[in-house]
Length: 263
Image (cartoon, rainbow, N blue to C red):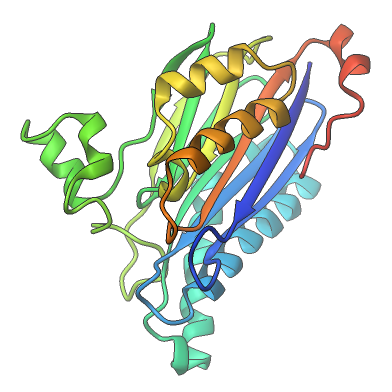
């Protein structure tokens, strides 16, 4: 089994890109991180960068020491907490960005089980058999409206409180990420998408399914999704970022040698 990834991180119609992503993928192991700095807070592009890079750094350090533990849920959650501490320490030393904070979505898998952690509204989607099998639940006021039955999940995209978050990383207090574990081994056809709200706002879940099924590589699927986004986004659309990961069987590896794993 081999994991293949493709990624994009675009500025969109904004003056700055406050999204940041960092990835590791090798054979049947991967650690993927996507962050979205909050646009209304100065220095959030720093918070997102520090968060993503620190998580990967901590993951690689533990993986070197103890490969099995690196993928355990408690360790994946510890990477997120360490990133929070790193961001808050940096902010204390650099008060000009004291209000900065970020969302985070982190996935770690060794091929036998998959750990998915997130804070905010950067999402993780999991697909099995060509269909959406799981998606994270946003930490936002609009998600609360869904939970109370006031709007449908699909309506989050146009809800007035869509960008009002109830949980972020780098704030004065730490709230642990939601953590979901899928204990089933990965198989051919499984796929994951980690993406910021600037991406999922314009690409619907059934379209993600269709583009994954109809594409030979994650980069092809990601290009199709980006084209959908660009056909719908306005002139001043948000930054948008996504990582697509698909699972190949051993015999397929040679066919995919040209795929860029970290585009």
